Image (cartoon, rainbow, N blue to C red; front, side, top):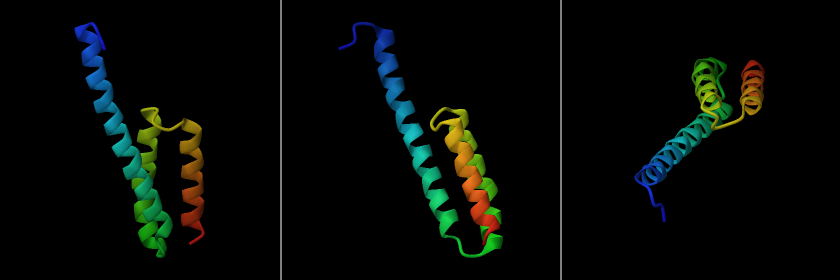
Length: 83
């Protein structure tokens, strides 16, 4: 068990941040699935900038690696272009 006030606060903070990161990551993954399942090109093109913004935000906050973000964005863009 932690012996200092600051350590107790850090434990609480880490848990809050972990849950927030988990929520954002899961939300982004669901948005990616929704984009990949989209059949109409017009709808997919509208959804693509939103999803790319979500991916960029995850990479900026180090929830996912920057290279993974780039790979995802490239694959999604290619998928939408091929519709």
